[in-house]
Every structure is written in structure tokens, then in C-alpha cells.
Image (cartoon, rainbow, N blue to C red; front, side, top):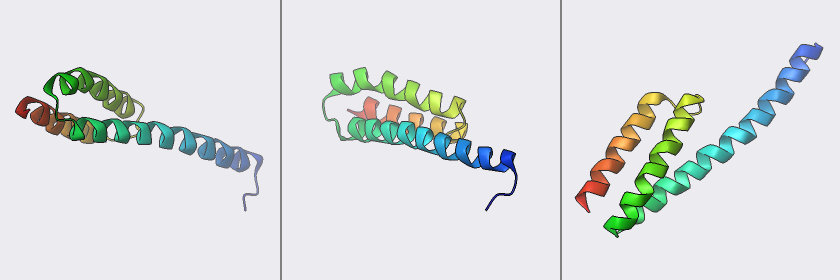
Length: 83
């Protein structure tokens, strides 16, 4: 266990941030899954900018890597254009 007040505080902060990051990452994953399962072109085109913005925000806050966000957006764009 931690012996310093700063280490105890760091553990507390890490736990809070982990819960926060996990929520946003899971929400984005659900949105990606919904977009991938969509067969309607109009619905997919309206959903794509929202999902893209969510991925950009996750990358900006270092929850996911920027290249992972770019790769996901690229694959989703191909999927939407193929519909």
C-alpha cells in the first residue's frame, strides 16, 4: 500500500479517471457498433459525423491513440460510402 499522501491521492485520481475514461470509451464503442450494423444509407450518413467527433475527442484526451481514431474513422467512412 502507498506510504505517502501524494501516492494515496494519485491512486484516488487514477481510479476516478479510469471510470470516466471507461464510460466514454464504451459509449463510443457502442456508437461505432450501431453505425456498423446500420443498413440504411441516410441513417449511416447522419450518424457518421457524430461518431467521428466522438473518436476525435477520445484521441484528443489521450483515451485512445490518434492513429487508432484515424484508422477507425477511415474504416467507417469506407463502410458508409459502400452502402
